[in-house]
Length: 126
Image (tube, rainbow, N blue to C red):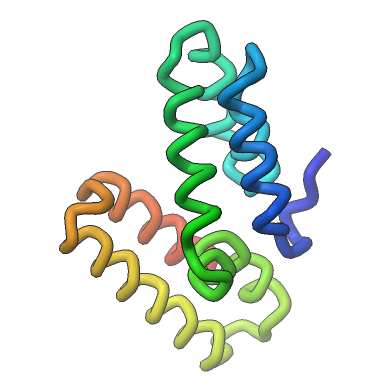
Protein backbone atom coordinates (compact mmCIF):
# COMPACT_ATOMS: atom_id res chain seq x y z
CA UNK A 1 0.00 0.00 0.00
CA UNK A 2 2.72 2.50 0.98
CA UNK A 3 5.95 2.63 -1.00
CA UNK A 4 9.10 2.56 1.16
CA UNK A 5 11.23 4.21 -1.52
CA UNK A 6 9.32 7.47 -1.98
CA UNK A 7 9.89 10.42 0.34
CA UNK A 8 7.28 10.76 3.07
CA UNK A 9 5.21 13.91 3.50
CA UNK A 10 5.29 15.34 7.02
CA UNK A 11 1.80 16.86 6.78
CA UNK A 12 0.29 13.53 5.76
CA UNK A 13 2.11 11.79 8.61
CA UNK A 14 0.66 14.34 11.06
CA UNK A 15 -2.86 13.90 9.65
CA UNK A 16 -2.62 10.11 9.86
CA UNK A 17 -1.26 10.28 13.42
CA UNK A 18 -4.06 12.64 14.52
CA UNK A 19 -6.59 10.38 12.79
CA UNK A 20 -5.16 7.41 14.70
CA UNK A 21 -6.06 9.06 17.97
CA UNK A 22 -9.70 9.58 17.00
CA UNK A 23 -10.69 6.53 14.95
CA UNK A 24 -11.17 3.10 16.54
CA UNK A 25 -8.04 1.62 14.90
CA UNK A 26 -4.60 3.17 15.24
CA UNK A 27 -1.27 2.89 13.51
CA UNK A 28 -1.82 3.96 9.91
CA UNK A 29 0.88 6.62 10.23
CA UNK A 30 3.36 3.89 11.20
CA UNK A 31 2.59 1.94 8.03
CA UNK A 32 2.91 5.14 5.98
CA UNK A 33 6.30 5.94 7.54
CA UNK A 34 7.64 2.47 6.73
CA UNK A 35 7.40 1.00 10.23
CA UNK A 36 5.05 -1.95 9.67
CA UNK A 37 5.97 -3.77 12.89
CA UNK A 38 4.95 -0.78 14.96
CA UNK A 39 1.85 -0.42 12.80
CA UNK A 40 0.80 -3.96 13.66
CA UNK A 41 1.48 -3.35 17.36
CA UNK A 42 -0.70 -0.23 17.25
CA UNK A 43 -3.45 -2.15 15.46
CA UNK A 44 -3.34 -5.00 17.98
CA UNK A 45 -3.54 -2.57 20.89
CA UNK A 46 -6.25 -0.39 19.32
CA UNK A 47 -8.80 -1.54 21.86
CA UNK A 48 -6.69 0.17 24.58
CA UNK A 49 -5.96 3.90 24.86
CA UNK A 50 -2.19 3.33 24.58
CA UNK A 51 -1.75 3.62 20.77
CA UNK A 52 -4.19 6.51 20.60
CA UNK A 53 -2.20 8.50 23.16
CA UNK A 54 1.08 7.53 21.48
CA UNK A 55 -0.35 8.66 18.13
CA UNK A 56 -1.27 12.04 19.59
CA UNK A 57 2.23 12.48 20.99
CA UNK A 58 3.80 11.46 17.69
CA UNK A 59 1.53 13.83 15.75
CA UNK A 60 2.68 16.74 17.92
CA UNK A 61 6.28 15.55 17.59
CA UNK A 62 6.07 15.43 13.78
CA UNK A 63 4.35 18.82 13.74
CA UNK A 64 6.86 20.60 15.98
CA UNK A 65 10.12 19.28 14.55
CA UNK A 66 11.70 21.18 11.71
CA UNK A 67 11.59 19.77 8.20
CA UNK A 68 15.31 18.88 8.21
CA UNK A 69 14.92 16.78 11.33
CA UNK A 70 11.87 15.01 9.89
CA UNK A 71 13.73 14.35 6.64
CA UNK A 72 16.70 12.89 8.52
CA UNK A 73 14.49 10.68 10.69
CA UNK A 74 11.93 9.49 8.19
CA UNK A 75 13.36 9.89 4.71
CA UNK A 76 16.90 8.73 5.49
CA UNK A 77 16.20 5.35 3.88
CA UNK A 78 15.05 7.08 0.70
CA UNK A 79 18.23 9.15 0.54
CA UNK A 80 20.43 6.13 1.17
CA UNK A 81 18.59 4.15 -1.54
CA UNK A 82 19.17 6.93 -4.07
CA UNK A 83 22.81 7.56 -3.15
CA UNK A 84 25.53 5.17 -4.33
CA UNK A 85 26.79 2.67 -1.78
CA UNK A 86 29.54 4.13 0.39
CA UNK A 87 28.50 7.66 -0.57
CA UNK A 88 29.98 10.31 1.73
CA UNK A 89 26.86 12.57 1.85
CA UNK A 90 24.65 9.64 2.89
CA UNK A 91 27.12 8.64 5.62
CA UNK A 92 27.44 12.25 6.81
CA UNK A 93 23.67 12.58 6.94
CA UNK A 94 23.36 9.37 8.94
CA UNK A 95 26.12 10.43 11.34
CA UNK A 96 24.44 13.79 11.89
CA UNK A 97 21.09 12.10 12.47
CA UNK A 98 22.58 9.76 15.05
CA UNK A 99 24.24 12.73 16.79
CA UNK A 100 20.88 14.52 16.93
CA UNK A 101 19.23 11.37 18.23
CA UNK A 102 21.91 11.05 20.91
CA UNK A 103 21.25 14.65 21.89
CA UNK A 104 17.54 13.84 22.33
CA UNK A 105 18.52 10.87 24.51
CA UNK A 106 20.88 13.01 26.59
CA UNK A 107 18.11 15.58 27.08
CA UNK A 108 15.78 12.81 28.27
CA UNK A 109 13.32 13.22 25.39
CA UNK A 110 13.70 9.62 24.22
CA UNK A 111 14.60 6.48 26.13
CA UNK A 112 17.76 4.46 25.77
CA UNK A 113 15.71 1.72 24.10
CA UNK A 114 14.23 4.12 21.52
CA UNK A 115 17.69 5.52 20.80
CA UNK A 116 19.22 2.09 20.26
CA UNK A 117 16.31 0.90 18.13
CA UNK A 118 16.47 3.90 15.80
CA UNK A 119 20.29 3.82 15.66
CA UNK A 120 20.27 0.17 14.63
CA UNK A 121 17.57 0.88 12.08
CA UNK A 122 19.72 3.59 10.46
CA UNK A 123 22.88 1.48 10.53
CA UNK A 124 21.07 -1.48 8.94
CA UNK A 125 20.02 0.76 6.05
CA UNK A 126 23.59 1.87 5.34
